[in-house]
Length: 486
Ligand code: N01
Image (cartoon, rainbow, N blue to C red; front, side, top):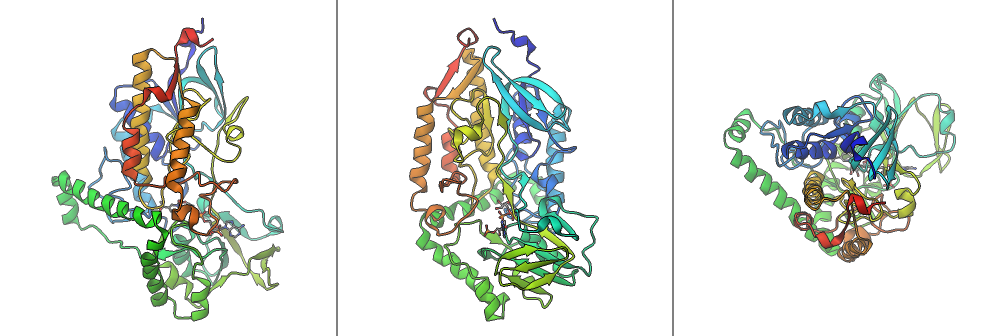
């Protein structure tokens, strides 16, 4: 008979960002205290701890990009900056009593499901532990990617990734190259442009850019939100509905032309030079890649100390970059704004990545057939191009809590989705994806996996996802009792 008393903890949550902390708070609220949060770093905050580049901010309004069960009336502006979001997460963790459960310096390297004992064995940098249930909340974008560019190892200047900003390096008066023009670059380029002597921006694909309607909240407004929480709820609901309305455009690419016209006007207004404007004009449908919101990026590119290079990188030398047209430009520092590699944790015997063969699939984006008692927050097809992923996380938390309660009620030692239920869900998502801008937008993006499938985005209204996950369909799950598990 397996000895389940040897389980170190009932639930192990991996990652202390929005997902992991949200999970921990839900457990605390339901009176479950037998859990740990394994965090590889020495602080909580996830992406909002790691990304500290100048100008780092959320591109979704904070009143929506926050927990519905922990509204913050004190956001100082509509699109808060990283330090404020990081503080918010810490406040939440402290307020709900999560901090004593966090184990810092635990970098999870591998996990193995022990069928006999019906538990996970987790190998981390700080030792081994066992848990009945694992919640993977490592975030889809936590491992920075630096491309393998010819000669990069010979470079003698300073180089770093935007998610590992080197704050000790003073860029004032230096010649700086930025590689990549995605969501991170558009935020820090305007911040450093004013300080550096020369800024070379290496652009592979021009992003679609819309103006950001950002503003400060006055003390009076914040006081009102504090005094009448309903006002804040209404404000949040308004933002939510505005974002949801955009789904129609993503689902009908021809309708995107209206938004594209707004972007063209913004480009025309901010960039006077027609040659530069041509370089910055995207050749694919808006929304196919993440739409970027910024008022400062385009004006910064028009400054005399900035050059936008679209000829590609040929090689990196000791003190310079040579583009594919053979032009050599001296640089003192290279900043890689080249994005992230989707993370998968090694599961011994059969890894999730082996099962997925480059194309992740999961039931409700939350559990994978063949992997018992394993939940994933922001798993396959839960990403968004139009709204707040915190909303998606909360929908997933509701399903996880329902599954945990169901296990308890039915006396199950393990549970996993049935393969056919998973296939049906994946087929449903693919059906919803067909004809949307995410598949018919004519661009390459990190939304697409190696097989060309969009395994990243939820291609519909978010309330549909939430409604789907608010109910538990017991018939979709395969549960086992301890006695059956040998
Ligand atoms: O990364 P990205 P990011 N040579 O993948 C280019 C989230 N986020 O760190 O488009 C040359 O967007 C690449 O070019 P291309 C958000 O979900 C959220 O900026 O592939 N260039 C692209 O321009 C976002 O999507 C917030 O042709 C190369 C850039 O590098 C995600 O994080 C804020 C290259 C990568 O752009 C990642 O954003 C910031 C190469 N070999 C970020 N390889 C919020 O506010 C890549 N590129 C919520």
